[in-house]
Length: 344
Image (cartoon, rainbow, N blue to C red; front, top):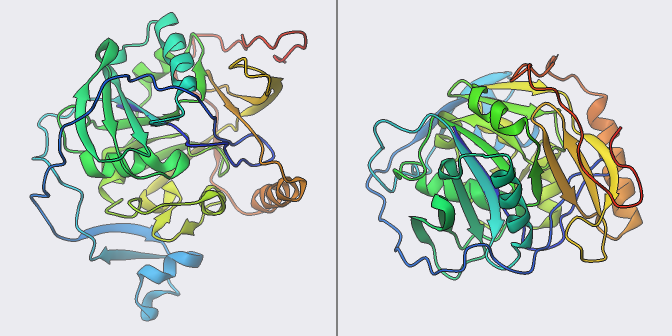
């Protein structure tokens, strides 16, 4: 499994319960990534089972739009820019980030080091770059990849699709998080034991989880070029709600199976980056992972997000599964929030 960390360009648009992006003011990677993009060595078609709900019908013949499940065939080429690695790594942590706003990444890496997470199993995708740069090893043995895509917390999806077969990136499982996070002591243990089927995605709730999730390698194979275009803040919300924006869609649209675990818990405000601008702190208890975000300033926008969240909870959803990874490691909230208590 690979842990993917994706970084946001600016203030994250979030749902009222805690999704959002962090602004950071310097990059963790201070070097220059100059490796040129490889030329695709294989074209073809992508096939997969999908649910034909709402906007997904645009992928399907009219004669089949009424069926619940169909075989989808798109003309987008597979993102195979390198020969498939053999064998792939078992798992990797993917961190979504950005070339300019990565102060949060320093904070996350410090927590990874504190809890002895194996940094060589980490891939950092940084959006907003001038040119695409191939994967290379950077500080602490971490793999860094720069991409020109500038789509907030979807940068690493675009990077994964492009470099999924590169020897420094490929894995059977990807654990996808943001740079605006912090791990707890149980996270490395969860990372070591969590398993996912090739076409499966594990999500903390049905939606609005900041796109942080765990998925198998075959899910990435279905991305094609869907995440190559820019997705603005409004599009991000549509995707988090379970929909699409342009060609980019919610992660479950590329999976054959969704496993839903408990939702994150809101903890309150904390000035985690010492910027005099408090962030909302949330805790993904099953994974022992903290996420920090800013609401969009508009109160109307907050209201709209709240209604969307309530509407979503009123629909049918997969069965919620209690967390089962590293059960001997007690989940204990350890986040400090200055003068006000944050942990339950």
